[in-house]
Each structure stands twice: as structure tokens, then as C-alpha cells.
Length: 560
Ligand code: ADP
Ligand code: MG
Image (cartoon, rainbow, N blue to C red; front, side, top):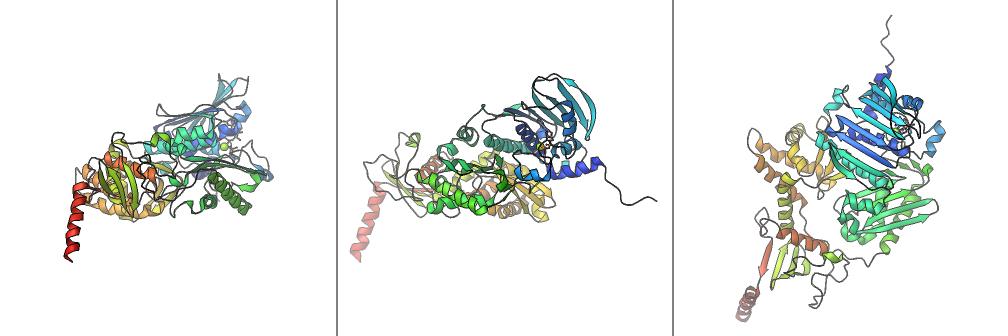
């Protein structure tokens, strides 16, 4: 009699496992690059075509494999990295589960070319996890994996993939993390033929920060270096005056692996103490190197989340390290320091603030002197006039124009280390899907991962994570006005920009640099005098107006 219970074939088992490990082309890149790192590579080249759905190639100059090893590498639970459960507590390599290659091979067409030092190269072709061809090839020490037609035999997963540009962005973000976690390894990323990342060999963490995170990060960052017993923390932390409204500029690496760990992030923030305002988050790029047996990384298939042993020790030491690093910097500025109006003082400087020299002057022929901020109003002197800026209206205008422009130039996106999900109603979800392109141009990256569920993978830098669900609902509501209409491109752009800018506008600037930037940006707006709602952004009081005010007041005084 035929039994209803059957053993699954290896192919099916691998495909199921692939669902767990390989969510997207980015997961493939991650696994292959991590293998290259485990193989001691000093240079790794990643090439992606069509967001990786067409082709992903990863080449390294690591120690390579012989024919036997290459054949075994795609067998499930084949790993050279651990041999028994005991070893799980002393892992120093990236991979150890021995299932990545088997999984990838089961859902793609794969070729492996590999050679050990001085040996002839081996070439394998694999389809659906089975070896279909085996031969020799000429190559130097190292390994190249080529993965084509990913997900071709798992259409359900393929359907949930984002558009190729969105996947490329995700891969770019992942590669950024890998470059930051291994400054001594040279990386290259080619995306559809274009060079997206090119690092030098053997760089410092600061070099990489400058290259990948931009000058704004590197310039305002303080070095952190802390060594105690087996603990070694190092990297860069942002000056308190350079904080952010969200946690997007936070890069944390534990034993060389990008991780998410709220406990550690909180510990870092605690190190800032009262130097940071509430709801502001510091920037940081930190490596924490600790004995491997204090960390359990085997919690999540993609190894992003971790569990810590001796958590309290970590937390205390990390806070201490941050405090020491901050203590070394020049005196800390209060959020917006009151200044003496000293007319002999160099224009544009708050006494306590340390700022980079080239930032000293802006608008060189028109010196501006900023005096003070009272609530949301900024007071400054320009062209012999007293100018009052409404920070809220000004920032509303600036953001609005920037977002409108972003339709052509692309809004800055900040990838989230830990993407999160939002649940929407069916109507909302339909609206978001219909207008996803326009929304993504504003700086979001969204991926539909289930019915009415979106994974948020990137946000515009001025949006707080906790408000995303609300914002998406609001946008969906506003987008309903376009149902059944044609030719709404420009109206839609304005509507989305208006909503987002209203969300992102600020009431205060938190320091002199920020005040200056606000003014510069306002000056470059097309309509710098009014916010999108129509309220004035600036009021100028010249001598005549002020005198008039005094005279008017004189009269009323004498009358009463
Ligand atoms: P894991 O990394 O968990 O061991 P993988 O499926 O990713 O599992 O890889 C299986 C094995 O294939 C590795 O343990 C390693 O021995 C070998 N391997 C994979 N990639 C490379 C590479 N780039 N260079 C050398 N060996 C590799
Ligand atoms: Mg691996």
C-alpha cells in the first residue's frame, strides 16, 4: 500500500532551507562574500547584473578548493569550519552551518571555478543542486562563484522580489557593511557594468568611513579606542552636536560581523548621557572585538541578531568607552548655546563651538551674524537688517523643494541595519503598491513581503522609524485622490513632498552649524520667502521699520 507520508527529496529539502537562508539576491552576495572572507581573501570582486536575479559573480583570492572540496562544498551540511557541536561555541569564521552553497545551488544555475596555490583549477557546473559538468580551468589561487537565474524554480519567492534597482540598492548597502567590517580587505562592486564601490587595499576604518559614509560623518566623528582585558572596542562616534532624529547612521560590528543589538545601541547612547537631547540618536561606526564564547550568533539564520553572555559587562564597558572618547573632545556644547553679542568676534562663530575651518564662512561677500534662537525663531543680522527666520517654516520649505527635486535627482536614502515590517490595511497597501515608484523616489525602500505587509528597508534621513506606519497610511489616504485620474505625475509629486516635508520639518536648530546650513539651504530655494503652506519663512526689519516701531510705541506710551 502506498503511504501518505513520504520522505522529501534532497532537492526539496534544499529549496525549503533556501527559503530560510536566501531571501533575496543580497543574501546570496552576503553568503558568497562571507565565504571568501573565511577563505582568507584579500581582494573580493562582486559583480551583479539585473539586481542579481540575472547574475551574481563573486571572485576572491582566498585559499581555494581542490576538486574534492569543491564537489563537497555544495552538499548540505558540508562545512570545513566545524566538526562537532562543541565547536559551535568557538566560532571565528562567518559561516558554519554548511548550508548556504547547497541552498543557493538548489535555486539557481551555479558555476564554481577554484584553484589552490600552484594547483590546476577545477570547474564545476551545477543545476538544481546537481553537478552536471566537471572539468579543469586555468586560474590563479582563489575561487569564483557565478550564480545565474536565481529563484528560477521557486516562482513564489521570485514574485516577492523588489525591482532590480531596489535590489541593487540593497546589495550596495550590504557591501558597504562588508567594506566597513573588513577595512583590510579590498572590495569592488560592479552593478550592471558600472563600478559602484571601489576601495583601496588594506585601508583604515577612517578611510572607509570617509569613502562610504561621506565627509559629514568622518569630519564630525571622534575616535574611540578602548582596550581592557580581552575586550577591544574601536571606531568612530559622532560628536553630540551632530546627532540624528533616527538610528540610521549607526554601524555596529561584533567580531567583524554587522549586528543589530538594542542592548548595545542603548549602552552607547547611555555613554552620551545628557549630552544628547531626548529623541536624538548618535552616529557611530564601532567595532567590538570580544572573545567568541561571549557571543551567540547562532540565533538567526542570517546571523544578524545576537545573544550576549555577560551582558552587563558589555553594557558597562561600552558606556565607559563612549564616555572616555567623548571626554577627550573639546568642551561640549549645549544644544544651542546662548552667545554674547560681541561685535569684535569673528562673524558666525559661537564661542564654545568647534567647527571645521573651511566652514567658517558662507556667503563670503555678505557676512551674516547669527545672534540667538528663541523658540522656533532665529535672529540674525544681514545687510544691516535684523532678520527673523521661522525655523519651522524654513525647514518645511527646504525639505519640500528637496523632495520635489528628488524626483529627478533621487532622494538620499538611508538603509536600515534592521529592516522592519509594517502592516497596512488592504486599501492602504494597494495605494502604496500602485505608487511605490514615486514613494521610493522620496527616499523609502519598501518590499511587499506578504498580504498587506511591507518590509521597510530604507527611509529618508529625516523620518523617524516609529512614525513610518502613520506616514504610509497618510500617504495612502492622500494618494486616493488620484484614483481613476490620468496625468497626475506633478500633482502627486507635490502632494507626497508636502506630506513628507510637513513630517520632517523641525522647530529648532541644534547648534550653530545647523543654523548656518539652514540659512544656506533656504537661500538656494526657489521660493525662499514662504513655506509651502504660505507662511513667511523670514521677516526683515531694517532701520526704518524698527525706528517706526519705536516711534509708534512712544506715542502710545505718552498717550496712556
Ligand atoms: P559554511 O560557510 O557554513 O561552511 P557554505 O555552504 O557557505 O557553508 O560553504 C561550504 C564550504 O565550502 C565551506 O565550509 C568551505 O569549505 C567551502 N567554500 C565555500 N566558499 C569558498 C571559497 N570562496 N573559498 C574556499 N572555500 C570555500
Ligand atoms: Mg558560508
